[in-house]
Amino acid sequence: MMQDTLLKVEGLKTYFYLDDKKISKAVDGINFSINPGETVALVGESGSGKSITSLSIMQLINKPGKIKEGSVTFNGEDLVKLSDKQMAKVRGNDIAMIFQEPMTALNPVFTIGNQIMETLMKHKKLSKIQAQKRAIELLKMVGFPRAEETVKEYPHQLSGGMRQRAMIAIAMSCDPKLLIADEPTTALDVTIQAQILDLMKEMKEKFNTAVLLITHDLGVVAEYADRVMVMYGGQIVEDTTVERLFTNPKHPYTIGLLESLPSIEKEVRRLGAIKGTVPPSHSFPTGCRFSDRCPKVMDKCREIHPELIPTETGHDVRCHLYE
Ligand code: SF4
Image (cartoon, rainbow, N blue to C red):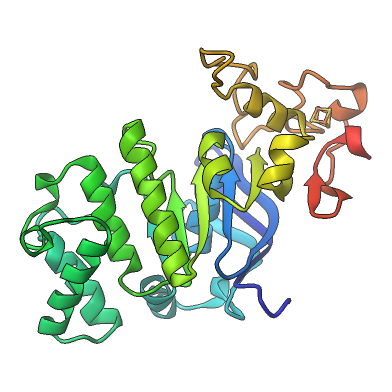
């Protein structure tokens, strides 16, 4: 493993064993790494396997799901092999996560202050007074002007954007080395979205936190990520820098996603630029998993499953067109 790699995911397979004996291959053999301070985006439509990837990294897969194979090496340690207790420590200290809907992660019966303080007392071993002082500092840092009052407020008293700021304060309270942000702004309106993403960027620069940004929005990727992986059918189909993805996209799925982006010239978002929907992960087509939707499909695509191959330095693509 390269010395500066923070997270290395190798051969990760997370399957769900359904009642009717079908196996849903939600994540099916993915490999990637993240370096300290780097922002890597994982992009795809819903059902592509992005969120299951993040939950697998956090070891939050419950029955009927299971990590079937592979490793998730973080700071030299394979998280898949850790006990629940050891993993709970990693989750509080080194890896933090923020979700699309902060209400699901915030506890409605505790004040915002209590929720930040709890993390600080548990993981940073601060006293109650020290934790309260730090909670106020953190809330100020994420943009609460009256932080002394906000600590006494409950989640329902805050707007969606403010709740997401509070989640970021909780996530950053332990100076995590890796922040996993799963669609952090999808539920928010556009202006607040930009504010939250700018705040995440600011926090990342301040603490040199690496970020795994999970999103379906390539506009967000262009603005905030260094590297991007496009996911489809539980696998990575393109992996490159953000610049290359936008200037020289290779996979037909990526090209379709880019064509669905709104632009000033087009005025209107061309929804549905990619026909059809992601196939269910228990019944992928034989051969290329994108073959039923691909405008460039060839006979070979319906029979042979393409491997992820490097096409130029740091630009990998899973498509027979590039073999
Ligand atoms: Fe399209 Fe074939 Fe490439 Fe799959 S392998 S993306 S079907 S051209």
